Image 1 (cartoon, rainbow, N blue to C red):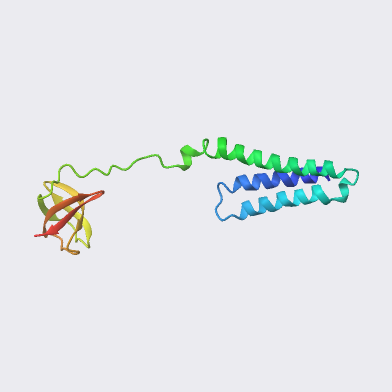
Image 2 (image 1 turned 90 degrees about the vertical axis):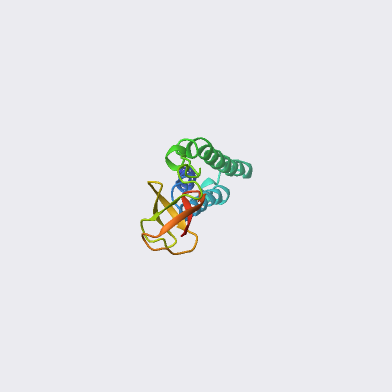
Length: 156
């Protein structure tokens, strides 16, 4: 019976650790149920008939302490630090305005602006957003402001 309790506890802890990678709470809930079954067996099983109430409580406390310690260690040292490089985006996005397209610069829309599109301004191509909403390809445009990722233009 003691081996069944140990297997249920380890299985529950492993399922909760697996929840780090699987969405949907299914593995975590099954892991918690497995640990609760192990606790129930430790406290009420007839297979541990020679054990006193104090020994059963110590076994149940050991299951809880082991489960919590294993999960805290997993989250503290392995899941966060070990997998951080592969699961976390560490790049940054440059949100500086476009240096070559000052407000007032004029150009030509290369694609239809609905309201987003591409325009050639001062010999360079930019992603632009039309303030008026729509502009045909080939329309003359003027830069009003720079936004992160694109330029705000209006038709002339």
